[in-house]
Image (cartoon, rainbow, N blue to C red):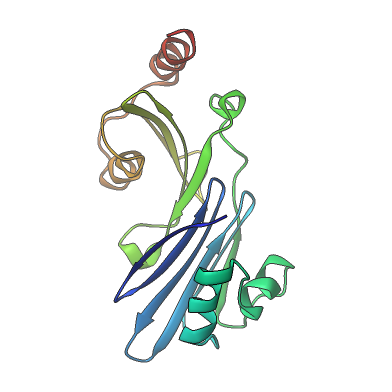
Length: 171
C-alpha cells in the first residue's frame, strides 16, 4: 500500500521505488511519476480530478492517468526520461529510489538510498548526466546528496562511500 502525504498544495503517494505526486496550481493539476526505470512529469496541467486522487488515497486504485503512464502511455505535456540503473554500490542493499525534478529547483536527479540506523547512505545522479554523482553518508534526509550535487559541494569518494557501506552492513 502507498504511503500518502497530503497538503493543500497536493498529494504524494510513495512506494520504495515509485512515487506519484500531484501538485495543485492555479491553472490545474500537475503530475510527477517515477518508478525504478522511468521518470515522467507534466509541464502543463493534466486531466485528473481531485475526486480521482482522493479515491486513490482511500482505495489504492490509481486514477486512469496513472494507469496509462504505468503502461507507457504518457500525456503529451509530459517530459519522459529513462533513469540510470540503480547504484551498483547500494544495489545489494535493496535501496529505495526517489527523484527530485526541475520544479523543485533541482535539475532532474535520481537518488538511491538506504537507511543505516539513524543515518543514511545516498547516491544522487543527474538523470541526463549520470556520470555526475554525489555520494553521501550522515544524519539527515536522502535529499542532502541531491543538494550537495546541485551546489557542487564536496561529496564522498567512491572508496570512502564503500567503507561506509561496509560499516553499515557489518554493524
